[in-house]
Structures are given as C-alpha cells and as structure tokens.
Length: 228
Image 1 (cartoon, helix red, strand yellow):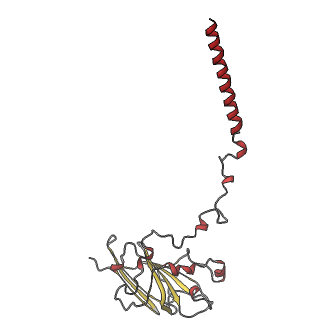
Image 2: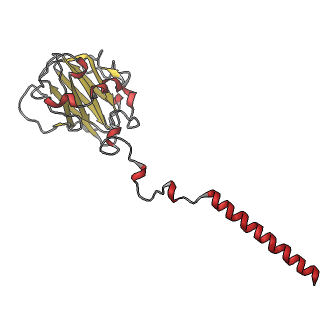
Image 3: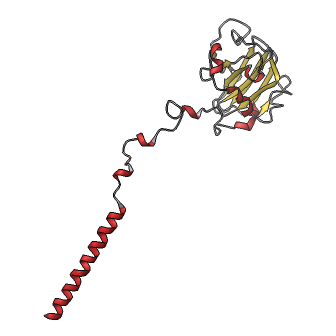
C-alpha cells in the first residue's frame, strides 16, 4: 500500500450567536469517498482537527490538519460519516454575534479549503435563514472521548445517517414551486373540469330508450312472422 498522502477537499460555513449556542457553530465537511469508519482516525481538539483515512476503492491515503481561528467546544461538537464524506458541526467556544474572519488561524490561503455555498449565509442574513443548526440533532454521536489519534472512540452514533439513504438536510420547500408548495393541479394542462364531463343520467336515459325501441321492433317482427 502506498504511503503517499493526499489532502482532501474541505468545505466550510458558519453561523454566529451571542445568546444561542446551537446557532454558534462551524459546518465542516471533509470529502473522502469510500473511507470507512474503521480505516480513519480523527483527532479533534479545542484549537485543531487532524484527519487521516484510507480509501480502498481509490487506493488513496488522506490526511489533513486544520488549526482553527478560534476555539471550539469538543464535547458539544458532532459528526456524521457518510459514504462520500465526513461532516462536522463544531460548536464555537466564544459566544459572539460576529463571524470568524476565516476558518484557519493562519491567514494564508490553502488550495484545498473552499466555502460551502450550500450552507453559507452572510452574517447579516442569518435571521432570514431557516434554523439549519438543527443538523446537530441529525448526527449520530458527539466528539467527546476522542483522545489523540486513537480512532473513532466516542463516535458510536456514526451510522446515524449511514450512506446517502437519509433525507437529512434536504429542504423540501425548494423542490416545488417558488412559494414552496405543491403546484395547483388546476393550472396543469390536459386536465378536464367537471363541466366537460358527460351527464351520466342523460346517458343512462338514452340507453333505456334505445333498449325499449329495440324491444318494440323485436315484438313487431314476431307478429309479422305469425301472420305470415
């Protein structure tokens, strides 16, 4: 097995709050396809995160180290392991309204770190965003109990959203029309209204009249045969 290491792509976004801890978080996603829980190690500390993992299908060894701009609360942070990536909701230690100016302590840009635009909102638009910090509740386990690079201890709930089978994080309101509701079936082409449907009572009356007429014709024919 190759010992060469590849730095995975890391996506991040954040929320901030001086009063609500669940809204004072960093969203972090490490893109590591086909890395099982048993083949990766995570070391989360108040000021840093170190990840190492191996993908059997891609034959790659992943490794990344992140030194955070500010401190996080390890015990209150959570994670979710899927077939495509490892997602974190890291609780910021300091309760502030202001955003972190960046994720990393060092201001130098790194090529593997990108903004997660699916989760990102501007600092002054946070109140208009749905309470997506509830994603904390969708993740199976906390980060507490992890010591050094000792593996996945304390993450017993990693299977909470196993693979891609769950619907967590999907905003179903975005799947319909502009107002988030189901489209009006009355506005969809090809549908007939009740006014266009034939009157069932009239149709039954016509059938009865036709039956009586046919019966009369049959009787007349029978009498003609008797006379002849």
